[in-house]
Amino acid sequence: MGKYSQEKEVSDEEKFRCTYQQYVRLVYYIAFEILQQKEDAEDAVQETFIRVAKNIFKISDPFCPKTKNFVVIICKNVSLQILKKRKHFKVEELSDYIPDERHEGNPYGISSENDTIRIIVDAILTLPDRYRDCLYMELVEELDHKEIAFMLGQKTETVRKRLQRGKKLLRKKLEERGVTYED
Image 1: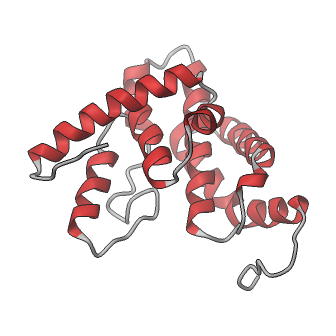
Image 2 (image 1 turned 90 degrees about the vertical axis):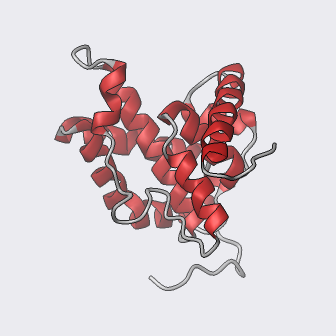
């Protein structure tokens, strides 16, 4: 399929169809890497696209990097929620099941010529998941607390606390790298 045209008015159904076709294999891959079970990965794919459908109004172009990031974050969080429900896994062990894509490029598909931005993004990616995803959604995707809470299936106050704590950790990591960070 060619470049998505924003010139014509496109229905939500069409945006969803394009988004699904574009990312379904990626979503399955990420879910399977985290969950290591076909059935759970399939459940994660289904739940991911249910959440995407509920938020389709936030997608203007199914083929843009922002949409890819949006879908990947939802998938990762859905997968981690499924993983947490498994009784034989401890929450502390979750990081062992998250695919480390930094060797192939970071999982959010960010690239920048600017060293400072690269340092900031690298610092964000080293944070624990609960802080990393919230910060990424706020600082990069420019979502508000309520949108983040909805996407993560968390309370707004939980997201606020995670952002507050995540920014504190980020500030410390950036200072260690010689970068000053201010809200």
